[in-house]
Amino acid sequence: MNVAATNLFEIVPLTEHIGVEIRGLDLSKPLDEATKKALHQAWLDHIVLIFRGQNLTQEQHMDATRVFGEPGHVGRPPKYFPEGFNRVLPGIMFISNIRENGEPIGALPDGEMMFHHDMIHHELPHKGTLLYSVEIPSHGGNTLFASGYAAYETMDPEIRARLEGKIAKHHYHYGSVQRGDDKGTEASAASKHPVFRTNEETGRKAVYVNRLMTIGIEGMDDDEAMPLLEYLFDHSEKPEFVYSHEWKVGDLLLWDNRCSTHARTDFPSTERRLMLRTTVRGEVIPY
Ligand SMILES: [Fe+2]
Image (cartoon, rainbow, N blue to C red; front, side, top):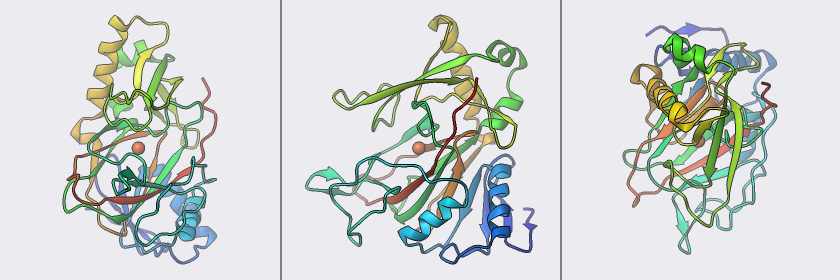
């Protein structure tokens, strides 16, 4: 495997299309401007950055987030805190299956999760997500990342021509991990965005629909739209476009939501999983 070295850190590619490990950086220490700039460029170039063996306070996690843009907001703080925590900073969200008084302390607690773009069901999806692992199960719970650029560039050109310029419709029930997994009383949200999105920082186009949340194409009957969307989902999730991340405690991952989808494999519900999530605020998507 090629190792691209800078004088600042090493970039180790993990697959052909997506994901690199960044070696030689301790994110608990302040980073100089040249390093921040090089990291930002590495993120644009490789979509997913992986930093192993980190030991971060919540403040340091926020500092790492600011390297890539303005941190996004999260909703209400949790009612309960897991062992070792007595607070959470604004901007940090627990992703966890740990339960206190019968209620999960964090979001998206259980099981497998289909491929999706975070917050695509909102008008202003965030552009990046950082996830830091604190507790992980003995097996399972991998995060899979698929390159939307690779999917766009290799898809059937006739289908691409039919869908170019079209707008997709998205819908999501909060907390769902499978399509149609309607929690009934929980809130849901809907949005519309281009089927193919241009990443404003790279100028490259990516497939911007996903199996979990995309429900149709504007101005097209479902009879016509759904087979096209199914083709896009299947094509985008092909193993050659995917990096599967096996978590270790202390991993910090950053991904670009504008040009990739991610999914989660199943894991034992009897074992604890705790991740801390921050986001990089997005910009209006033009179309
Ligand atoms: Fe997600």
